[in-house]
Amino acid sequence: MQYLKYIGIVSSVFMATSFYLCAKKHGKFSIRKQPLSFFGTIKETAIYFNLTVIVTSIMRIIYLFILIYHLGLQSNIVVIALMLLAYLSMFMVGFIPAHKNIKGHLIFGFLLFAISLIWLLYLHLLILEINRSIGYVGLFIAIIYTLGTVFLYQKNKNGGLWEAFFLGMMIVWDLYILKVFFY
Image (tube, rainbow, N blue to C red):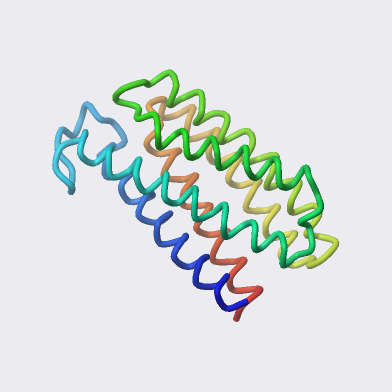
């Protein structure tokens, strides 16, 4: 299963890149306050950000399919369906840039948040039966991710901070899974 470790690490690197670009894109988490970013204009940074989200979503589908197979959950239709819906939403968040279609971007963003939460909770309840350590830590991460994302969104309506927090928590989850299974 060494290949899964490497896919997971590369996936985390892309996720971390998205996390960084997201924070950079919004500057102090507001497009209006910072016209330039590390990659040039806000529009250029948004393009880089959207591309990393698209690539990451494709990589994570491959990575999680293999992980689900490794856990013996490949016959569970609910797990597979929720995972595909979550990462289809993530793909669409990257495919529909906020600066071109804010309504579509936000709709898929909320779908991503809601479906990802249900999927994380459901998957980790199943994992509890296989590996209690991963199950409990995964549930803890999912709960912190939910509370943090909702709280930060309420404080920061334009989304930069809660997007960054969401991606950051996914990196934590990736690295924890890799540590438990492959080190």
